[in-house]
Length: 176
Image 1 (cartoon, rainbow, N blue to C red):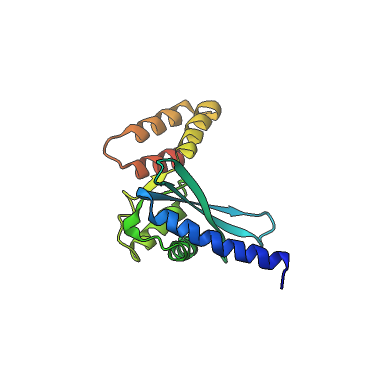
Image 2 (spheres, rainbow, N blue to C red):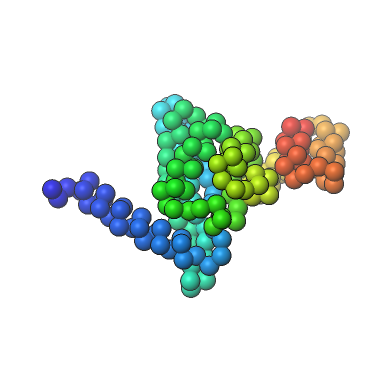
């Protein structure tokens, strides 16, 4: 049957195999980024998964692997179930992955902890936080702070060497 749907499915299968081979031949390890998005209608709740890697020609490739329904919200458990499925679908093993990049939401911290129970990784050192989110917090604090003392507290909490990067961002965000 030659329908548009059939053509799309056939092309998807063909290109998926090409992407799997390309990722397997990557120069070095890959980085996986993931991001949740929810529509205002409470029906569409997606997780986007992207792989970033260098191919044999040393050019950076960014490939959207999936836009999966999280089936009930962006909880750490739902995120990791979908993310783990995508990694399996594209035959990406934990020893191929250098980092996971996601925004600074605590549900992503939970997702990384849950993923570390399924594959070998350190949920803290394998997680890259979104610098754009951090810059947004800092700019918002500078532009919209109404309490100078709170801004000073946030600044010193953020640069305190005794806290980890994760704790510093969380503390800074909570103070703001």
